[in-house]
Amino acid sequence: MLIVKKFGGSSVADKERIFHVAARCIEDYKAGHDVIVVLSAMGKTTDGLLAQAADINPNASKRELDMLLATGEQICVSLMAMAMSSLGVPAISLNAFQVQMHTTSAYGNSRLLRIDSERIRHELESHKIVIVTGFQGVNKREDYTTLGRGGSDTTAVALAAALHADACEIYTDVEGVYTADPRVVPDAKKLSEITYDEMLEFSSLGAKVLHNRSVEMAKRYGVQLVVRSSLSREEGTIVKENAQMEGMLVSGVAADKNTARISVIGVRNEPGIAFKIFRCLSNKNISVDIILQSIGREGTKDISFTVARTDLKEALAALEAGRDSFTAQEITHEENVAKVSIVGAGMESNSGIAAKMFEALYNANINIKMIGTAEIRITVLIDEADVVRAMRAVHDAFDLSE
Image (cartoon, rainbow, N blue to C red; front, top):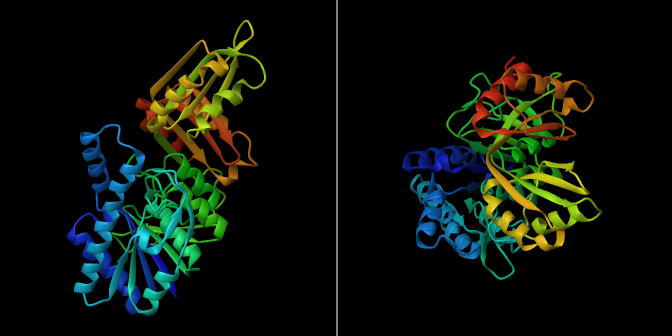
């Protein structure tokens, strides 16, 4: 049996936790299984490296940032191999270049294209635990690239898919997937299982349990995931194609503070204007979520939309650069906003879900700035200061702790 186990930065934050993870992986190895371990950088290493980079050059290129950030995972996997060796178990650490994890060339947010599995298979056949750097790959120029924050999840799922692993386990600092962030909503309930589609919405909407692209890949290749805690032996949450949610219409509530609103005001009310605006952003690989168009006066209209707050500066620059093509009267933005969403496969065929959510926010005296909907989720944009109250109000309205 081949098992892929991924551990996040908090799970390997110091010597004690590294040896704890090593011992946990060795249990499966001694039980006769082949084991691949995917690791993130230790603790706050990535944040520390970014701070160092900003101190040296606040405008450093994404290429050089990826070169720097790739070192965090390399340190972690080598220390883990040393720990396992000290415990009497053969292990080897491999980085993205040694494995040949081929990616696109988009520094900072690249996508995996293929994995050359020959080296890993050779090491497994030599009866070693193979420890692989998460979060990184190599592009056609043989430069290191990174997959975006949380990308180690995607590395693990990609390895599980490429090697046809029997299990893919994602270990975090929580015991599974909850109906809301238990640090924000104390009575949040752990889910025993959840569908790929629901988990994908959660991941895209701010729940930091799994990287959204890892869920996309798991769904595409049929990799069943288990999310569980590295610090306890509790059963986790299974992520799979179909889940028994016991009649739940809404599976949970998510919030995303990494949000900003941009309003393009006073553009011409004619065909092609929206295309010209959003082309400016797509050319810079900037994703857009909620979009609202309103008709103004004298043949004009306003278009508002949300982007990740981390993309705001680049988005505004792209719009200013292309402004002549859509001749806006004004481009404004707002940063102190956040998205709160409800997710649930049961929402598709049930009316009244949106009204119930809006009623909960009304009763909590929380104003809605924008609304976005999809088949299994409803998202509202609110003031960032209201996020905690909003999550608790909506969670209570749908009795998700029951």
